[in-house]
Image 1 (cartoon, rainbow, N blue to C red):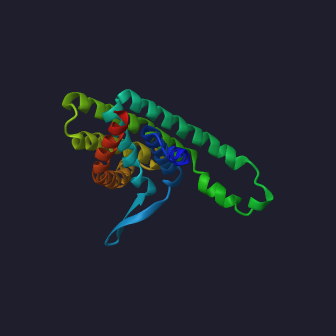
Image 2 (image 1 turned 90 degrees about the vertical axis):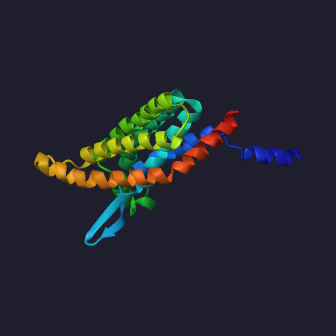
Image 3 (image 1 turned 135 degrees about the horizontal axis):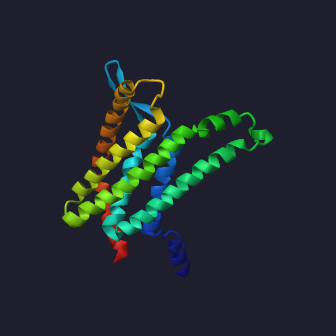
Length: 226
């Protein structure tokens, strides 16, 4: 009986620890794998492409809201700062890893390794800047709405904070990553708008779909807090 109890206890995971791990997982994966895009919608000759990060960014903001709902804004900001530091460390480590000479067995795959992980400093700065500002904004907006509305209409508070934050995240990233200094301001505005609006709408759509999971996450965390 004691052996069974010990085995069961080994599989027990603190819910908040799991949520923080999932939060950092989404951040790291969106940074490492988000540079890949895939065709999402075909409209005649026009194809709307989306980044892999489209599945993860709304999850990050939803985790923020779930933590605030149960533990408060201070706890959410602490998790946010931890994620920001992990992202910064990732971008510091990647150049170091690339510069190390590969062992004989991996010489043939070194070019692929550098191609995959050697994303430009501009993309790295754009990603880190967008996350730093938009994620904090999500926490602030959700906290303000909660103070004014109380605990009612979680779906509304969650989606409003997500929609605004996702818009800022998209604007900052697209602008920093793809603004062409050799083009006119108007040319850049038109081009960036064509990227920002469709991508933001997709993020909003994903946020709406994930709303039930916010309710489940809050209920799940409250059970452990009791």
